[in-house]
Amino acid sequence: MKIDNPYVYRVFSKVEFESFKKKKIFSGNELDLNSGFIHLSKKEQLKETLSKYFKNDKDLVIAEFKTKNLTDYLKWEVSRNNKVFPHFYNNLEFTWLNKIYKKADI
Image 1 (cartoon, rainbow, N blue to C red):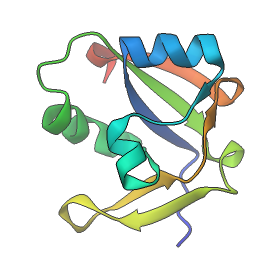
Image 2 (spheres, helix red, strand yellow; image 1 turned 90 degrees about the horizontal axis):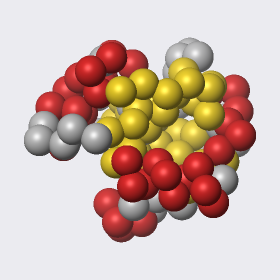
Image 3 (tube, rainbow, N blue to C red; image 1 turned 60 degrees about the vertical axis):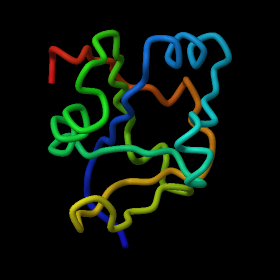
């Protein structure tokens, strides 16, 4: 399945993001590793993702990636609420980061 979205988003804890920035690579957190892919969202899915999984977290970094940089390992799959979500089956590289947002920006 191919979806025409120019950007996808990853919600990082501050600690995860600082590690990503330092190591220049992100292999996923425990949920990602157990799932076998890195969980991403489309922009219109971010509010629900934040509300459902990060409701009480304040120090979050939302990273925007261009889908054209992820195409080889990016799959669009039906997930939560029968909606299609972007899943990334590889490591994210820091150089692919397009822009960052805070939770309050979303």
